[in-house]
Length: 580
Image 1 (cartoon, rainbow, N blue to C red):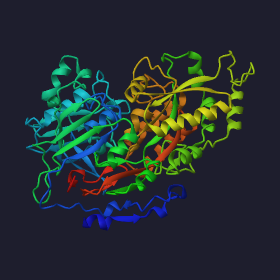
Image 2 (image 1 turned 45 degrees about the vertical axis):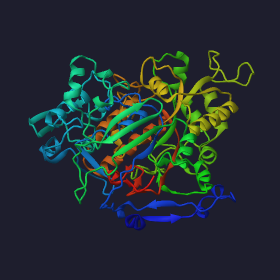
Image 3 (image 1 turned 180 degrees about the horizontal axis):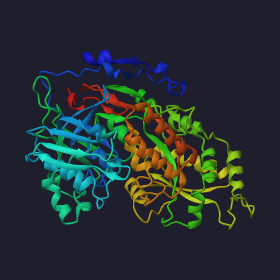
Image 4 (image 1 turned 90 degrees about the vertical axis):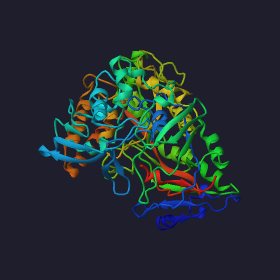
């Protein structure tokens, strides 16, 4: 592929760190860095009809995009729906999708969108302004619907107003100018003709659950779900009514059939990739040597650089949680959280867990989030067990009975249960390392990997029965898209979600900054606002950030027009497969 040769730099194994090149059995392995600015997808004259197989790490919790708050669901639904806008990953500019064009009035408070005509849902029904109004007014902005999207479309506590002008024109009225508005409109538009009945019956929260017939899951995206077999696979077919074509007039996407193979264990998934049962897969640091030892290397590894994803430990600070109240009191103490942060050996975790292919992380921002990433600006709680123990002693913990475990002033042993998602080897290794280091300063940790969907339910639903968790966030291009995490009212404000009013002064300040950042149109000022926000969060340590792994993906050479980035694949609908 000519475009690929223009866009890549090939690196041999000899350029990898020493701990990745020490095996005498390791031959050369292609590690590719893309210059996405030079990526030019081809438009082939003949497109082979070959299915694409990819890895899904878990069964979904829901097939309703408005209710999906975890990657196990969003991954399954990817490609089934479209938004009014989409992001061009080469230019990083917003482009029309279901919208054809837009007009801005009143200094950014009023937006008039003209919709594409002739677009159909994958069941053949026409897409109109009624669907847009239903999606935003009746679903995303409905207080009775448990959707995290409402956080994104709330500006300083006030909702956006959505009106139909005619069948193909929609008017949005904002309470204030809203900097990330166009980006936000990449949110999935939902079919009124399929979901309105659930809303009227008060059953939207159970609509499109995992037992729903896939034929009922109707979107305007490039694919539709044909079949879902729990624990095995999700089969997708090209949406016959999809509206995009290439410059030759070929229908997009090029690939007519996709199969998402559900494999919770990443080691098993890697074997399936090596055996040709999966066409591309995210690669962990410990996978590199294994892949380098393969005799047949019909794949390329793409090095995408630092991921925007973060991994962190968070304690449950929710006063309403079903855990001992004295533990909530510990967890709400900033000195306690800072002590734990000092007791986490981030650099050791980077080396032991990721073979050096990760960044120690002390803030909510990773190097992928330019220009918000500024390590000199944020506090850094370096690994120091002696300092950690002294901080705990300063707030009343001591080993009163000489058994090696600290107790609080009331005599409660300093112990807690730490959970993470089973099958995620990196997090399981992190948990084991953290447990051992905390033991050295008198803290007893009960480490329990559990099913991912069960974990998510514990975090996001009453009675919030959990004490501490190691988990991650995927990150976002615009900080506002993390509003549901950082704002105290957010559904993913993990340490204490859905607060009616901020429970602390610092959370109140963060709320104010998050709301101000959303309405500030000057980019440099927005950067300063969000940096101050993340500095406060770093100082308070409600989430103890641990690492930002390097993002890498292994792709079989049979796939063409492949341009992955840390924010997704550029022109993914142009990918095609020349052989199985």
